[in-house]
Image 1 (cartoon, rainbow, N blue to C red):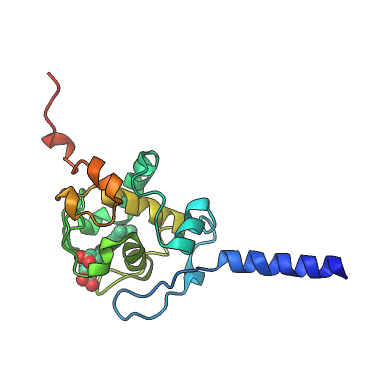
Image 2 (image 1 turned 60 degrees about the vertical axis):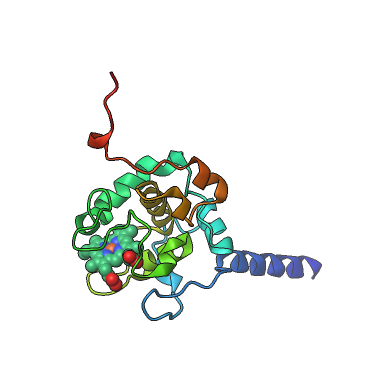
Length: 175
Ligand code: HEC
């Protein structure tokens, strides 16, 4: 009997652990986001778990995920937002101006990517896993060209160390 209770509470804990502790909402109408549309792959990585518990993206500021984040951005986003997120048919994502102010947090940016916004900006859960969305966010934050002081999505420590993105061709050549 004891064993059964133990087992049952274990299952309840697992089920609870998989749920979001933060409320994720649609960027346009504020309705709750339904995470059940997410791809099976990449749903329960350590980063996704941390994000769903706290709303912070552990990949932001982690240089190790940048190559993958870049690849994902170039596949899923740059056709509309530009190679360097400078803007094309979709708005620029590399400065501190946001149509939807909540995109200045990684939670808000995730909500816009997962649930979409208006017109051509459809929900992206069909093209990226939850984990890939977090990596794409890290790359978008890396592409920021504005004043680091306005990068409220970074921690104070990250802001102090942040170097605004320079396109490869704009970088001075080493003598
Ligand atoms: C088919 C074109 C298209 C694709 C693909 C696309 N977007 Fe968009 N995106 C748009 C358009 C158009 C808007 C403007 C929508 C609006 O204002 O509601 C937009 C808006 C946004 C915004 C809101 C910006 C702001 O200023 O608040 C973010 C963030 C964003 N897109 C991120 C992404 C990311 C990340 C990807 C790739 C995973 C992506 N988009 C893929 C067309 C696209």
